[in-house]
Length: 115
Image 1 (spheres, helix red, strand yellow):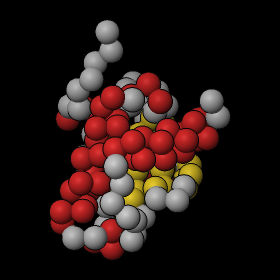
Image 2 (cartoon, rainbow, N blue to C red):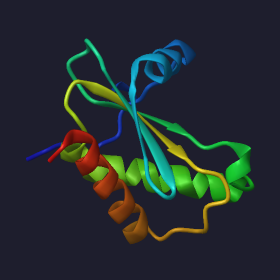
Image 3 (cartoon, helix red, strand yellow):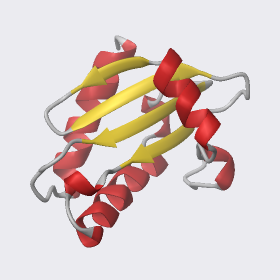
Image 4 (cartoon, helix red, strand yellow):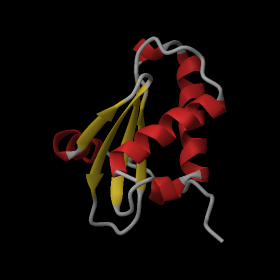
């Protein structure tokens, strides 16, 4: 059975990690999200989330982050193994449902990995 947790191990936590991903990663965009993927030597997949104030007030930003974290938790197999992935929400996005978020991120990740 696959693990469905979102532990500290699964997160990009330091600024230096984000900087490395932004500089060395591969960028892919969709209507509402941008995904940056970069290999890591840690042996497991990690997720970073970036939602700027341009995306809305704190309530909207936190909802976007919760949706992305839940998608990662339930769909870790879609993310490339041994890679760090940063998901960035674009500004002025409408309130999305979980299903809309899943559809958008799934298409983006499948295009990203070539599956």
